[in-house]
Image (cartoon, rainbow, N blue to C red; front, top):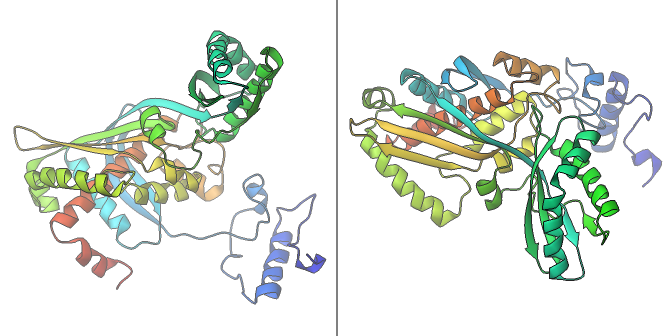
Length: 390
């Protein structure tokens, strides 16, 4: 690579307007493309240090406001307005409709059931017996490993070590709570210290690879559906019969039957989510609030459950077993993203469970609206009226 082909960088002070302008000029020279919009930003480039390299500007994704969404969760209570960053027409309007339905039915009740973030080292032995016995040794030394983690990294708490033997290897998942951070980086650091302690103290001094790929970082997996990655959160409400007929133009009985039909479709397709859609709302909230967008791959997985009640109302819930979200660290402190979190009173420490409850309720609202639009034959017409086909 010729020196003239290298992207301009300043090793000592790279996150400045001057360096961003140099890179924009470089792009124009090398490609002919002008970055006028990309380079029109209001944030201080210095605030992006640690979030991005070779800063050149911002991606200005439109943010729409949905709501209000009434929450009667354990942590999120009251009415919330939801920022959704998307370029898909109709999306914000559809989620707002679902939120109105939930609110008029008394609100979404949400529960964070479990919190567990993993790093998954694999340990290598000469035979299967050694690997099995090493698993017993880990159980015997779990308290010592917790002490190593506590002494090396501030936030993570080691709660358990899952073990899966295969051939002459022991695959493990070191499971942590990570406070209000998503926690992938801090659990990686904590597990590295733990593995080095194991090598120093176990008689066999086993070789290890820090990730044996069963932490399934930024990949959907059935293991996460069962064991949890991030937060396992459930959102539920009771759809009143008169509200369904008035706002959704559909009978609860038909929604109940559709759920059974859709479940077979989910099985046939092998889809990771059993409802109408979860990735739309999660991705739009993630982008608006500075989450790691790649975590949508794990976070969107989940199950829908519907039960027709004796009085004609409909119990409806969504379970997200691998919702990875944060209110502190990562991209949450960037100016735009922080404002969007503050809009929901979800920025900073002590707010992650509240934020998770709101995300789950938003997913539920999207399912309510889209499922009803499909059944009421309003899906295509809504996009024609408000969406990209106009």
